[in-house]
Amino acid sequence: MRKFEILLVSGLAIAAAGATQDPAPEGLLGTRVGPPQPIGRNVRALPGDYFPLATGNLWIYKGSGVYSGTFLTLEITKTQLFQGVAYFLLNGFPQQDYWLREDAKGSVLQYDPSQAMEKLWWAFNSPPGQQYSTDLPGTCCRVAMVASRSAAYKGPLGTFASALQISYPGVFQVGIMQETFLPGIGLALRTQATGGPSYGSWELIYARVGGVTVDSAPELSFGIALDNSIYTVNMMPPVSLATAAPLLTARLRLRNTAQPITLNFPSGQSFDFTITNDKGAIVYRWSDGQAFTMIFRTETFGPGEKDFVIQLRLNGSDKAPLPAGKYVAEGWLTTMGAKVFDASAPFQVAWVY
Figure (cartoon, rainbow, N blue to C red):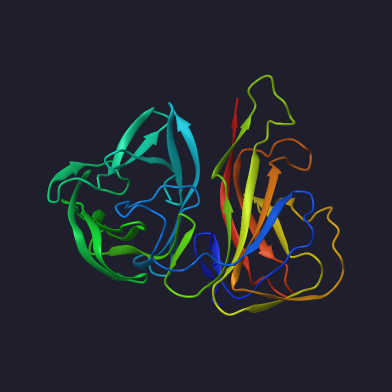
């Protein structure tokens, strides 16, 4: 997932550089180096699939209006069965993560595990002009309507003649006003009233759908992705300190679809990763106890992608599970000088008794 300037893109950093890695030390699940996925609009999704649900799908939006200078990243991080039905976890909205599925009619439904019930978000096959009830977060009146299935759309990803538009009637001061979806790609544009005369919008600038990338321009990026936003410590008896603390999996990704770049490393170490508590104290550092060759390296990277995947159990230095609270995971490339490729993501630890 993505972040010179440094542009913070919901935990991703857009910058300038590349890297390699020593043989995998303990705690590093693996690295992957390869060419970037093809850039284009021929994504592997059904033509009428307006919000493709598959693990790994990712969308990055650039804000405008009241959201100018900010970015929003949505990603399908995993799948899980509830009552025998498969749902996909959508991560990135500020409110919370959501379990979603697509039904036989092409509608997208959200499952609420706490209530064991489904809620309708988008009814893509609803007759144009006919209103339907929706529980999509951010709507003010819980009413939606397919306005068009052949709308013209021109944006960062190109020009399209078959966009689907959903409008939300009755918006007053606050709420989503309209959304535009591209077949086989997903949500391309959301416009919403944000109070009084102010407005804001999110427009798609990057998507990875079905393993294929849809991009607005060549890019150089570095980012961090976690496999969850809340990690639960299981203190239900009988308690096993060996397994009470949950596992956290983090992925650092360097991506370059622009010109090759050069990085200088002062040692055999290519990256580091830390976890910091809400008091600013580092409770975990990946490189602690590691040994690296002390040799200066100059490396060229790109075009291509490289992943560093780290897995750890959330224990403190005393081997006990981390206390409940808020934490920040941070990863960066250990190049010469100040941090250039650096990204972070917040998460929480909760205890269950």
